[in-house]
Length: 226
Ligand SMILES: [Ca+2]
Image (cartoon, rainbow, N blue to C red; front, side, top):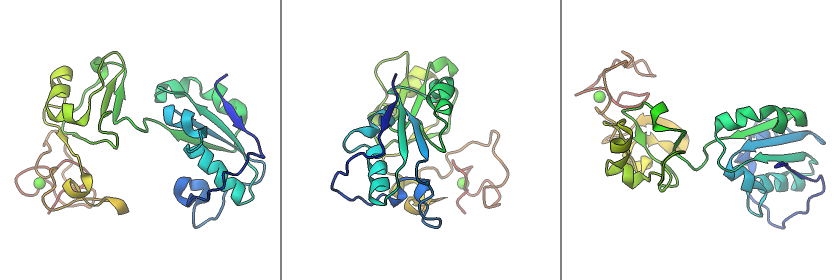
């Protein structure tokens, strides 16, 4: 049995953390959306499995419930190493059978790309980047994991035979987007994605309706920089 439950009376940790953005259950415009005695299941991988550790995100979520006087039942259904297909296979047992009012699903949290085998992967004109630069690509039947620097050095393209035109970004704030903090994914001046896409299958207009390509070629991403 891998699930772990937090009792309704779990102790406060004495530290109040700004948690309002931690879950849509705290959507600012709607206030606290969980009701007393409701159940929430957290389905995920290693980050979720560790989520009920002292500083884990589920612990912080439960703390927020406690300090706001909401008695909710929290169930941790995280299992380290699990991908979306693994979670789907245990969805009935680990989620539905708990009859939750809410479900939080969290996949691939600290891994850029995880696949069972390189044989099942086809990709190109991507931009690789990960918060944990040591875990950009994981192939389950291959060691070691590919870091961002290994991808930049061409190790991933050589191994996979894919991503021959793909790039690496170490800092998307300055290398890619106009305003990542505010979810503005328009390409900034000098973005490494400009003119690095392909005409193959490219829509004639970008997400804003701007005709593509602009300049010397198609840009990678949803927006063509004018
Ligand atoms: Ca362009």
